[in-house]
Length: 429
Ligand code: PMT
Image 1 (cartoon, helix red, strand yellow):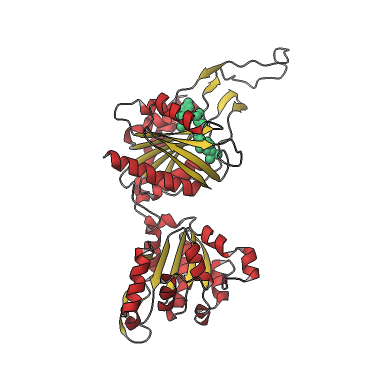
Image 2: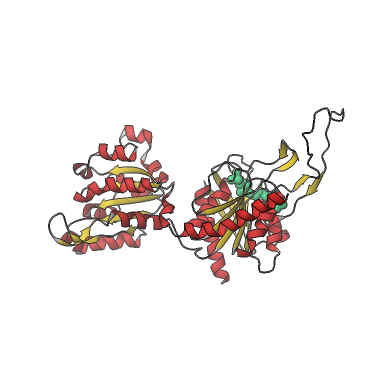
């Protein structure tokens, strides 16, 4: 027992050193990110090759769309070999559409970066055209779109180009550069493609919203296992996916995140510190060890309400007592989230509730019973969402409000939820 608690203590104290180191490197934001690189026609197109490699070096997956004029400057074969995926060229090409259609491409991307972006591309995108694959995908995109212009300095300075730039900025596009300096045409001025290093850094920064900067978030995730004997346990179907997605979203919003996780098969998200636990009691103790630092606590874990009163020391044999039935007595586990919510100086406390009916009613009951600030009710009546799925649909309940977020990926849903929590906290002052 002593060894177990010593191990837990070591895990908890390691949290704070690790977090400090990780927060210093914004490029870790790129790990596992899906970057759709749009290349348009311009002499700087050759730099897209280096850009692809650098994104990959930081763990991103890159797919490429090229306009027809881009292919005059760098070959699709080069970009295919580097990205390790077929290059997308045409809006209605049956071959590439059958691999991944234009709408799927837009949905696939976490970020669309157009580098280099020509004056012609800026004009077509600013005026809402969807007359080739790149502009159509940009129109269909719900992810951030970043544009790195590159052109002759006089073209960049023209009023019409500046108007297009401002239109795109006003619509939410991120304009990266251009840099100033000697241009391929021999002129000097603003119009060079932003340096590859800076493009990589600025792209990674787009994944960090900063709304939870300076906050510490403790999240529980996954199932707990309650031992019956050394080889058997009682558990549930939680995969940890929802809790891990929230940990990633909170971290991307700038928070320090401590994830107290029951047994799962998931990789720990970048910059998140995970404390591994098995049972509800382990989870309770681990949370208590770190909760003093927390500004926000989110209980996503499916914690077993009860555990067998006695876990047998040896494997229970089938014919042990000559009986054909086995009776187990259960005792109640500690309520982890209630213990957090009833502390003096408690953090903003968010509970989850998996329900099959009367979502809002049951969520409100939990809000009151457990003294929470917010309850997120999952509709798990449909088994394709909630437990162990990649998607979820939720109703978020607070004392005075209720809001439905319809079916979407756990990742997208987590980003929305984190922004709502951040808004609530800033509202409370
Ligand atoms: O892990 P996934 O496969 O992605 O699935 C996600 C999920 C469905 C498990 C998750 O979204 C979810 O709904 N988690 C809560 C499950 C649930 O119904 O919990 P509950 O009603 O037993 O508990 C309500 C709240 O109290 C939860 O925040 C829970 O973490 C907390 N609790 C419960 C019991 C206990 N002893 N201690 C607790 O802290």
